[in-house]
Image 1 (cartoon, one colour):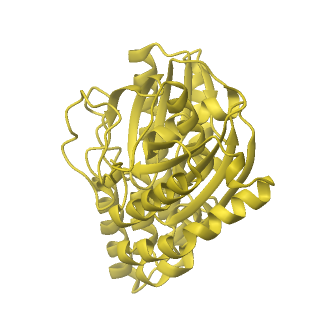
Image 2 (cartoon, helix red, strand yellow):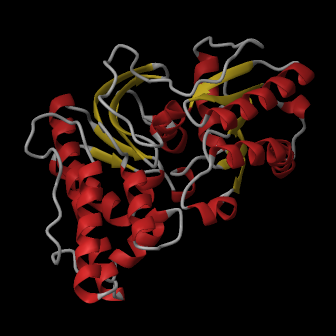
Length: 355
């Protein structure tokens, strides 16, 4: 089935995306329409605004993806779409668009778990074999998964509250930095002193691979308030040092938990995906952990770290090969765990639909 050509549609949060991918792992096009400007004044993603923007842009990004690939609907083998988890309005918009294309063009429809899209990205980019250890780390989710197959995942641990990307965004908001916060915090941290503020490393004193970032965010808030009370404001050096300390804390927590997950699983490869995987110091720390454990390390290109249609198209191809077909009754899901046998995590952040 190397001659398969799939359209992938992604609309689970604030990026409207479409891509064309082949069964032999070629990305013929990968179009992403960002909504950053629409949400900039609100300090985060507004679900209603996101859903309306998806509805307005989906047909346009699909048209662009086909044009860039030099293909028409008649050249496709199937349509894959994110059917969850995510902000339900956006997911519904994507599912309805995909249903219309599949019905109108007479193409097979495959509903994809957004998290599986991230988790299967190493197979798209590097053709790795199962099994491998995947760290999904982004604005809405953070979990360690053993990937055994396209629909076979075992969760080793995850966040019990905020995801790291959400914590980065909240810190940026506290420090009046633009959204999305991750890249801006990373840029500020590169100029700061990570040793100045003694921020906590949550859950490192407990066994296992679960994570928590809510307390770290609160500690950063208290440190900011103390600085403002002492100096009457926040100096540029204070902001940079606080960003550096925060990023160092997140990095050390993720590194230690990854070390534990590798030891527990005995996995030959540690892969990382999701928006936070674009953070340079975090990638470097995880690569060092894998090397120390004698395991391989893989992080996708930066353009495939954040939400994109290529990962959904590839996941659709993998599921199609495994025999999956969905009908017009495919439903959008706000929550959809990859490991359905695992107990739910104890909590979730504001973006917990992906957790």
